[in-house]
Amino acid sequence: MDTTRGYVLFEEDDHKVIWLGWDEDVSSGAIQTNQYLIVNSGKGILLDPGGVHLFSRVVSVVSRFISLDDVESIFFSHQDPDVSSGIALWLGVTNAQVYIHDIWRRFVPHFGLVDQSRITPLNDDGGTIALGSVSLQLVPAHFLHSAANFSLYDPRSRILFSGDIGTAVFPEGKEYPEVDDFDTHTRLMKSFHQRAMGSNRAAARWLETCSRLDVSILAPQHGAMMRGELVKKFYDWFGNLNCGIDFFQSRAGV
Ligand SMILES: [Fe+2]
Ligand SMILES: [Fe+2]
Image: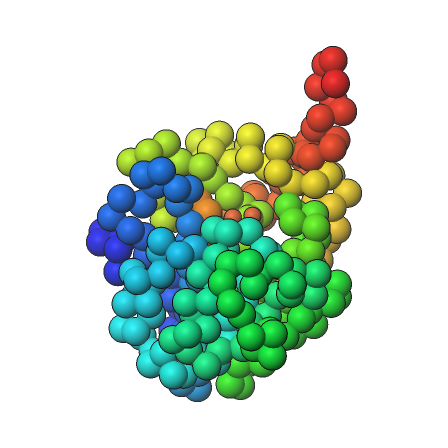
């Protein structure tokens, strides 16, 4: 598979969801990331379009699916540089409005000059982002790992864009875009979730919300996508993992 060109995850009528692929040297030096595009009724939203060094490749892949003039929104799950450090470049080539939690509104200008009127701040509850005929649902994911953090659910494709939740850290050269063997894959997810996810209570809140959603694919910002029955397997695995402060307290000598 040519993973540099991305591929369509879902297409029905006027609605399309695209995984935007990877650089050829996907994990040399920088952690591998996934970027996504949703198109509805000819309008687009970019999800966590990524850092500065990815920008030229991601722009060229996006342009294969939609005119940059029709990218009307950019969603940032949180403030990390691998998510949002390309913000000034993206605002320069699109007319998009940026959606990010309110507490990060005055941090992202440090990635470059950013016109505050182009930022729509989100509150803790999240709410929705309209795109054509679809209403994208923001799922609070605070402290997983960022202090102000969201996942995003697309009810048309039933894809849950989980942000850093579901991250796997691949050995260099061993990347794959979708999980096949879940049990083996957990070895690549475990230490990141133990360290980065805030606490078991934070995880339980997110899992409670997500278990009420009908999810076809869990699409994280790092690692590999999980389809079908693997979504429930992930929920069970994450719900039973000691993470964050609970993990640290459980270690001997801490
Ligand atoms: Fe992050
Ligand atoms: Fe990340």
